[in-house]
Image: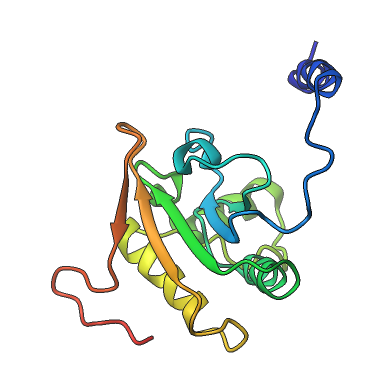
Length: 176
């Protein structure tokens, strides 16, 4: 039996007891979260959220990509979210490589270059990455300035969130 077969079996049990079919489309807490896809980060549990409370957008590294921005714009303008949170974490796999190294490895393995993905968005400092993602959201012309955008680092060993300020040690204040 494959893992997919196992999760389909689990879904059958879930569906038999399902009681959330009447939840409204807009998130109850008016919150949108962009977080890393890391399996150790269970966003709803970490933030004390229930099904229907927030939009959770996940990708490798918790990066504000074009698609994440698309989702945030839809989340705000069509579904009423009023706050955005970005969550990265300690011990992230995105710290373990550089984009060009991975591209070269894939070219060697497959003998070809590709158009997409153009960037893997690897980074070398989690705090700096969170700051950069906050700035990507805050600087987008379609994201209203009054929407709070806050960033955090989840510690995979302790379960705690630490807020990342826009100014770090020895760093200039970010525009915004």
